[in-house]
Length: 395
Ligand SMILES: [Zn+2]
Ligand SMILES: [Zn+2]
Image (cartoon, helix red, strand yellow):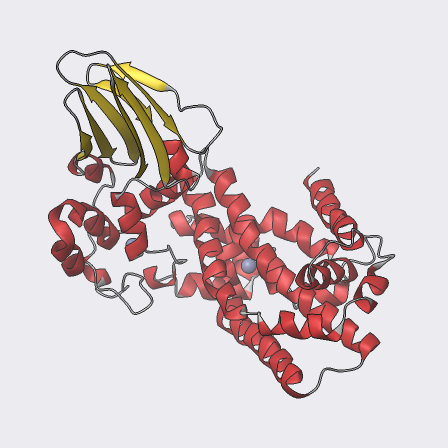
């Protein structure tokens, strides 16, 4: 069934290609996706699409390529692949889907490179600056692969899906596509990550790669688990993290003492954060000082992040307060002096007001999900007797 899903996803690339609305990058990726799976998929129209792609378009596309940005994508995918095993439970599907998206990103770059070569066959080779850009693009992919392909063990938890992906590829493409094919039969290794097995399966006894992995199964060899960036911490503090982001953050801090400390330091001010974190230039937390890591429960931080209140407006009859509490953001309109107050909050003009909740503190508008979906401001309208307030506010 998943095979069918995967197949139809690639088949849909052809419709995208033939729609005439695809960008040059999408044409290259879709064409390569199909050509690299041509035994399994209909490829009619692919050549025509590549022939229709002009030289300036291809050169502009090449200029915009940053294949090195795939490195963090793949590292995150590795972390997520490991979560599939370690978290196991309900979130495993979410981790798996997200990790597979990372592998697909690397695969699309391979497709674009493949299609680019075919394009050059039709249109003549790129030359001058464009040829240099092409060489740089291909070299960057190659160095990415040599840095990461030896770590393909991290993706073993995705093996059932990786085997399906591998088998859809033309045989000549399979080995190069290490993100799908390397260690694709090493499923047994996963069990050794969480426990020392009493008996070794025949695969673990015979597979050279697995034997090497078990021989130096030092903690340092564990798959990466992304450390929190300064931005993560800031967004956590401001209550701006989405549900998914929070789940990931919790999963990480549950196991990473350094990041758990950083989260704990949030309510102790900036100075403490700087002290707790040794920020690297790229904004990630340094991975040094592993020896000092202590098992700090991520549950602890919840109790220690205080509610923050900011008075946005105060009138004779009411007060407007923005309340941040962990990941939640609420706008509170508090009646003063016992007056009847009505209020409405609009995320965008012409849309109905957010649903107000009436509580002991007044009228509350929950902005949490709006914030999680990227909204940053809204319009507030308050009426109390003859007094009205119309204003925008940020959250
Ligand atoms: Zn193996
Ligand atoms: Zn960490």
